[in-house]
Image 1 (cartoon, rainbow, N blue to C red):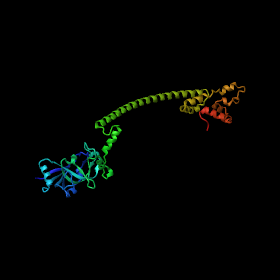
Image 2 (spheres, rainbow, N blue to C red):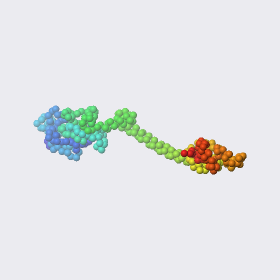
Image 3 (cartoon, helix red, strand yellow):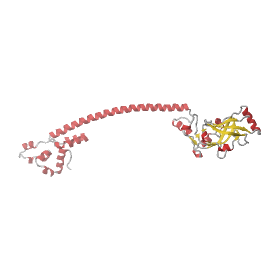
Image 4 (cartoon, one colour):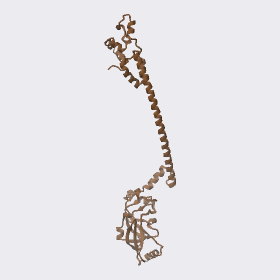
Length: 335
């Protein structure tokens, strides 16, 4: 029969959920020993060999040459000729894999194998990317790719193969965060995610409203505080001016008293109210029997009047009275 060409491999996702890049295939071992097996059965003798092994795009192709002196091989060849067997499958050793999202295809649940070595190729009832893929461990034992534990070990960095089963792990984490069962459907997961997105949007809108209301309230509070401050400043000016007019304060101490009112209005007012109105020296002289300033008590005189009467030295002899008169005049104690 004329040689029949088989597709040994392509880059579609296999039924185990991963795929293998053709560009990462090492064909050298296979090209040196291009054995053709039946269903990856290497316990029995080969049924032929492969010729014209080649890469076309993302596919690996080869021409089948059956051993016509082998009864089993002739039987398989006849089924191929009559169209009962149409598929081939490749067997190899795994290499490195990658969970790069750009390499993932729809339906792929495990990483992409980016390097691997071709060991053999078989005539199969089902093709290599339809559950007939064969991978072998370092001891040339065929791996059971239908066993989930085997797949996890295959794509485990601890095994020396640089891969991970991140998709499955991430899905488990996602269902846990959403408080769903591990076997939750994609629809159930999508519905929960939509609820979270809707709640996020509602909270963002509510937060924006609260922010606007807070800014408006803050503006009102600032306006109120400014108005209150202006009113208190006007009241402080009136109180200090009145105290100066009544002789309770010296005009030179006005700025100091205004600072005290600005720092603590109520405390400054309390201190100012405690200073009694002063009778002028002139009035005291007029009512004094002797008619001189020396007969007027220093305690009854304003600081400015004491200075004018040249009695400052006399005042300083009474340290406490001096401090009091100085404070009343200037709103601070002498240094």
